Image 1 (cartoon, rainbow, N blue to C red):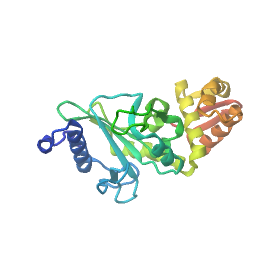
Image 2: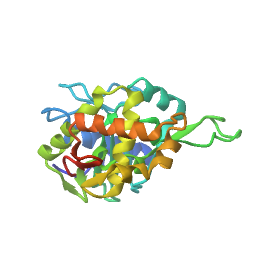
Image 3: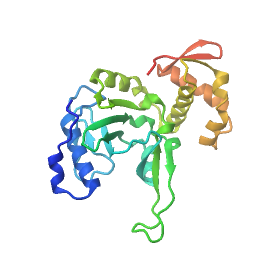
Image 4: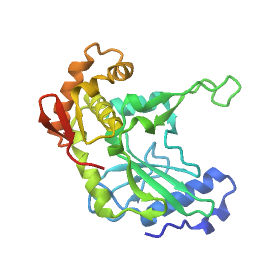
Length: 257
């Protein structure tokens, strides 16, 4: 994988955002492969296709690209808040590619967030634009990367070192089962998985998860039965092959990242 962007393409543009978009999109078209199947390329989407920059020509997985120079591990700016919520509820969000480039236009990090990890819990509403703004009143959102478990942040390039296709595809395949869940249930599943990851241990107890009851209640204020919901989601995670039962009240992550 050649991590260098084609700087010569920048000569036709003046705005930094345009240059970043053109160079990063060209790099993805030239160097990227599909993480979801064995296709060794991604096809650029048609011009002005909302929220989708690439699609796999074989399995038709859709991808959105966000390129930036500074890496923020906690959040990333996204588009409209209402449109994002509609996409999540309609199960129409694309997979997200977050690309960081250096001042020399070399890809330093590339992270994939599979579409199944987008829930309302990871979307932060921003303040409306001021009355003097060109789009006064418009409300955008942030994607809270810190609310997404490690299982949903798959590295394709890390510290300017490409990760093998085999590893990337294996990690994507591991969480593919989440796509079978309806969005209304999937959000709970991802939130409980994120709590498990926050424990930073391979084996854990139900009581340890109960300690996060206030956090989960804050994410799901309409649910008054958080503990039964935690137990339900542990069963879902067992069925998906992400955790296993050890003994009454004790569980273990089935596969480490």
